Length: 449
Image 1 (cartoon, rainbow, N blue to C red):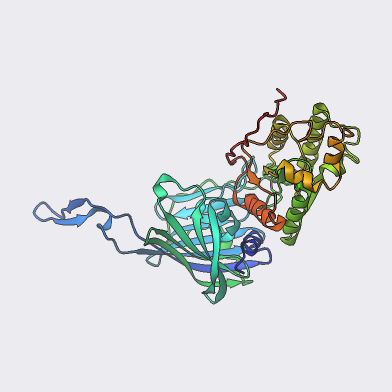
Image 2: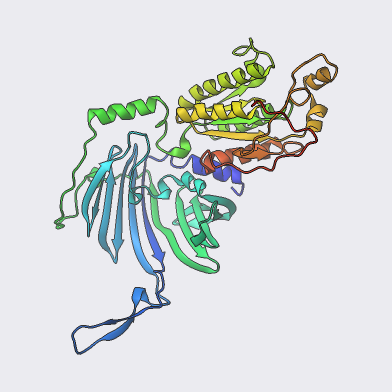
């Protein structure tokens, strides 16, 4: 379990086989220190000095959380401070309700019209969907151990894009080795640990009293009532429609299907890499479909040649086909030369219009290596004048300036490259792309503009 691929698979498939879950956490944190002295006056004659916010070296504060989860998506979270219930949240899958000791009751609908989850943070802790941690943290497995009677996989983590205020923040994480539950999280700034969350006890497949998921304030608490939205037939119809178009194929953003667009010179290794990614995703239980440019030319694009206009049409057809596949809940992997930047931008726009995540991967293999490989003899035919319009010989290739991921496939193992792509799919939103230094050449490729 020390391999990053195993960790990605564990987090992605977390809780798939869990029917119910009950866990209790202890949360320790240091309140922010203060260097301000204030005067507390109990009356006009007496007063005492104290530190605002607990002083420069405050002692840790502790709270406890109790969490119940039952399929399909019923959840309850209780927050206790000094053994007193101060906050409570319940969700039945369509609506959520929260009670706060100070603010009373509030409620809302779980899913917005755009298909985005709107659960408050109290009801959406990382342990219920640990794969979302990959969107903000970069993980490195460090070992195994035991926590709350469960075997755990340990990992270190760092923010992918640290904020200025984060400094050198790092995390130590422990995941249940069987179900992926986050059982411990500690946050440190330099050598100082300022926050720890750890599971005291956890049980799976447990019997939960249905009354746990009732929207009711604790006994004896008189609070103002919230407006309780009901899951009306319009809400149900909206959610069903969102499910049909793939936006709610899964309740978690990182479980949505998406499109991987592999671009590069002929014989760069796009198809080999596409098949390697397909194997990795299939091993993780995710349905996939590879759209290979050569195979498309045998059927869907059999009427197209190698002219710029035909290449643009080939990319357009592939983009629409990939969008339809992804909207049905299947990850589409497109392996297409797609040499022109404008064609790739249009492919991204087509996906954006349908709300499908799009990841552009540049398979950056040098022309010399591609010609040495030449499995189909295309370069030899082009050099002999038998084939006109081959990209890299007598037709230009416009390298991506900001791909989601550039990979150099000259001599790298396709399995390693596939792991990087799979990590990209789970770890980052599309559109946050890498800046790539453009290769220099004596004769720059002409633009179609």
